[in-house]
Length: 204
Image (cartoon, rainbow, N blue to C red; front, side, top):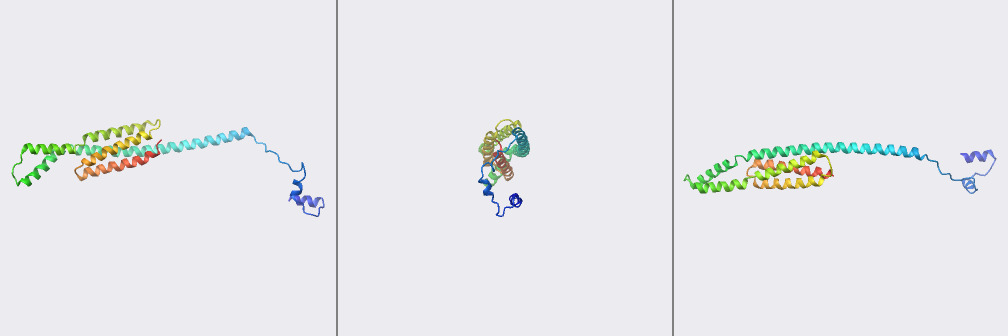
């Protein structure tokens, strides 16, 4: 070491300790390092800009992936809405046929009261009518898609509100469902909406 070299050069027998030098005035002193602030600031600014650029690029890609996923789920919901709408077109006639068969079986072939029969048909048809719920559900989906494609401002809360409204309409349709296939489609809509709700927790 440097201390050992000094000891040998000057013929000092005893080991030289660093403490001996530190005790001497103006032999060992601290000098503030000289930092080129302009160069440091330039390098720091460049590094920060690169980091921010990388962060924005990553968030943009995440946003595009989220948009694609939500768009696919909205399309699946719209397809289910269309299917339910078509399914409900002939609901009145199906109710008539079903009630006629049940009444005939109960009356053992005797003719039922036509007026009473029609009243029962109308009652059941109104109970099963989901046209209003389907219309509102479709409207909510369209509004959600507009927010999704607008790409401006904070839309997370608006999306969350629309999902709640869509779930409300879906639950009402489910309560009116009268056959297994229709119930299956409603369950599909609810499953997609739950996934949408999970996804939009990441939306500002």
